[in-house]
Amino acid sequence: MFAHNKRLQYTVRVGSSNPGLANLMLEQFGGPQGELAAACRYFTQALAEDDPGRKDMLMDIATEELSHLEVIGTIVAMLNKGAKGRLSEAAESEAELYRSITGNGNSSHVTQVLYGGGPALTNSGGQLWNAGYIDSIGDPSADLRSNIAAEARAKIVYERLINVTDDPGVKDALGFLMTREIAHQQSFEKALYSMSPNFPPGKLAGDPRFTNVYFNMSQGNGDARGPWNAEENFEFVTGADAQKSVDGDGDAAVTLTETEQGVLEQLVVRTASDPESDPLTGAELGMGVDEGEVERQRQ
Ligand code: MN
Ligand code: MN
Image (tube, helix red, strand yellow):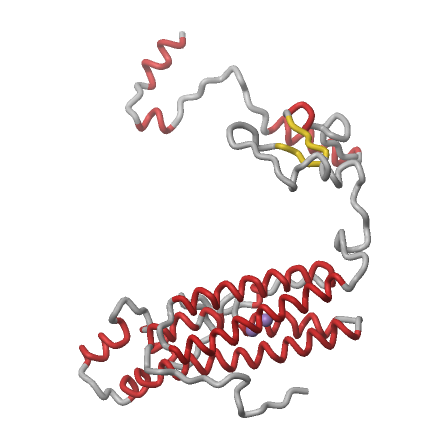
């Protein structure tokens, strides 16, 4: 079950009304790296998790992400309060209201006109939130890696938002939210490495002939060597001849029934191209080629 406590996880002290800034904050409310996506990601993983430790961690973090959603949503609502009141009550002239929601390069008109100043489940550009942001695959070694990357991305978005915010109270709350993503990333890393083995993901081992091979397939100026393709870690295979048909002749094959084979042969005959032909095309007619002249030249 869920229970709600009316006190926020972190206090939100917004200095002044700023609808343009509110719009930017929506990135972490309804954006791909935002708190709703994070909460849904860990909540759905927790429901299916069979390891008691991971299940508990995922539920703890999912619930915390919902608390973050509340904090960032409250920031959006607070930043919009002034504009919301003025717009709802038509407290200023049309021109002044128009300026207040589109001025200074801000684009808060969609949030103001369409959503009435409330935090909308969109990103900062108005793109609607969608469940496709969550890429869980139902395997802990793959999902934990994805969760680590999701926390890294969320941390980066918070960092960028902090850099464009001059309101000290908003900066402070964003700093808390950013810091918690660092903590989550560490928990997910510990959980991943507390599972042994955790690589490769899943149960099947890779084909040993290709597991530690590096194909140098982009060749030319700029070829570089590093630990990602070093001889002590990888067999470095370069040159087109060494890279093609690495398991045999490289020809594709399929076994067909006699009937399938028969109709496919009919299809091949019906759609065969004639390499000897030089047909007059619509493009040539469009360019004013004289059909009669072409015929005479062919004879
Ligand atoms: Mn969060
Ligand atoms: Mn997080």
